[in-house]
Image (tube, rainbow, N blue to C red; front, side):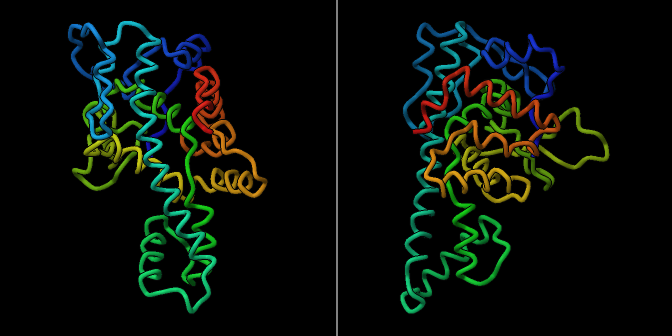
Length: 268
């Protein structure tokens, strides 16, 4: 997993990034794409189709237009990913209510697939269900939108453009992605390449819901569920300490982006 965009720790730069006025290349490898003459109506680039390619966000001349369009492009894709997760969660909840005689071989087959997908650590079906009900849950849209903006330099980074990778996700099989130019000789990781933006979002959510590193995030979310509280990006951001070597500063920056851009309005 790639850590967050490296920061020099200068407060003015951090504030500018949160506000959307600072658009560095997230990897500093090379310019993301060649800037062309902006269209007369940049908003037309943000298509409603969920299969649409990532727009060229460098063509926006007004910062707020760029930010609004970036969030408008991503939000329905984030919501789509969450709907899939909710369908899985609701199926698990229904399965949990069945008696042992009501559980079919088809149910067991699907349960084992989910166990593999979310890296369950137990083998007994009833315990798998309990573990998965903690893991299989939504990621608040505000958190996904803020991290995507941060990790992809608002959709303009080299890896966002070339690999549809909006969250800095790494892979470790040769040829699985794009090799960072700043990678040292003893490192083997690549920045994962995805066929679509949707695939990048799906993978990001699966990582947060399955990797051991984000167990704290899932515990926070589960406690909020138990207490009947809303799931918010600011609350779950506390579980992102392992996402970046900047740790507390990274969490603080994500929360600032959520707050500044009023992203929790989308968490309802």
